[in-house]
Length: 301
Length: 301
Image (cartoon, rainbow over all chains, first blue to last red; front, side, top):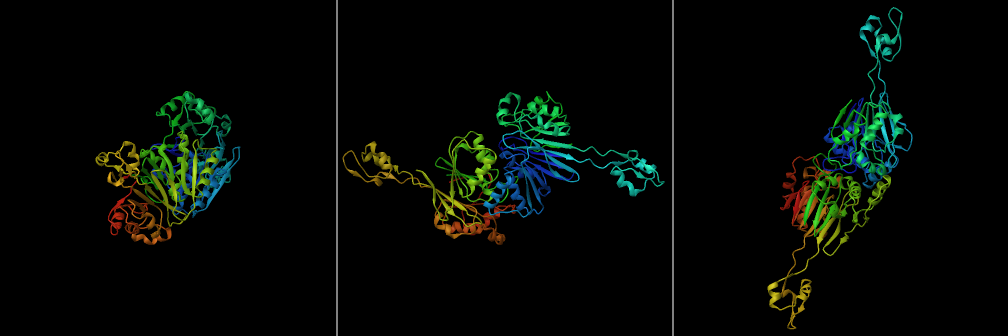
């Protein structure tokens, strides 16, 4: 998995900071998560190939998370895109996108599918043979979901020395990778785990922005490798976090600890703070493995 | 008048080019004209004070001219704006802005007035004691207006030597500036033009983007000091200009010549051209006084 942060600041685009958007590369998929104003320029700057984006996930309908989407959809058309585009977003987004295209007497020359979300429980929103994506219901001022991206377990790996020793016909290798026991050339049963190794561990990534401190998400994100959790504020401004339904760095770290995640990435910073390192310091009082998102930063895991 | 180009490229925002937006400063007004995606960041980069913008004029509802507006409206709120904002734009814009604010359960903490345009003839859309703004109906793929900004004629200036010689009481100076004849201290009539000088010449600016070659605008923009006219294409791509209802540099210059304008500024370039100087060279075959717009460029006139 490769996570490319395009924007990780809250509220408004500024000269050197961008609102929320990130690209998750996983098993040849390029998933775009949220799409604040300016995302298409950030995609260019980060050299993401527009055509490889086939699924866009929008957490909620505050402007700093979707105002860049209609422009991106229009640009796809101007670039002559012909591959399908799927948008997973709260109900209402379709209406506003279609209205804007109509006002401009415009259209798309590719299939545009809206998958509108209304469920308040976690649900599977995308699945293929390698990846599945679930919503993570969050607690914000409007209907909001995070997204959990989970690689499916891969195939078992052949332990070639043992496979050759056991004298198994090559025709059975596929079955072995799938975990089956097989019969060898002498007609004896060979137990799968004596000649194969476990698959590479499957990775998982949870994106949680924006949300108040919310322990109900813990069962959904339990043991994920990487958790991106908003930390709009520091504890010193916890009183601002409550009415705006945001989290502090310490609260984000608490969630990370309770969910036993591998790593915590912080983002969605209020622009009131000049030095972001204080977010890391505060979070590390609860949870050690903390990284700071920043626009243009790439995480590989 | 001071014209600050924020963006002057067609179609999509790119790493180093921005879609249409410009700021006209005239008699203490700051008028924002068009508002493509990224305009709020361009306003910051060009150090335009957000609060001084009270009137926004939108030419038409293609994305490269208005996708930045909803974000700007939201940012005004976040910055605590309390002064009124007037938006002059084609019918339909109000619906799309209100819908997006509603979806985000959002609002404005200042009065937001929409003045929706539907008239196909030129009309007065703004007037105060110093400036008037008229629409310029253009010929594009959707309903489109350019805008004509015209300073009203100022007051006459006192020719103090003559005023003193004529022995006029200071109480009459105001009347003199307004062009009236007055009675002097001896009871004689003093003709206004014997003691005053004409006002400073009033300036005018016409913004015309996007449009096909369209001579019907000539009576409206006749003799303006400065004409901004789109030139999306060069003559070599004139065949693209026709179906898209855009102009070539040569056509823009022809309009400038026929309207007897003082200066022509070109913009709204297709991003297919690397060297913009060819636009100037082509236009100058028809009209000498040509300047090229570029993002961040300031014109004073």
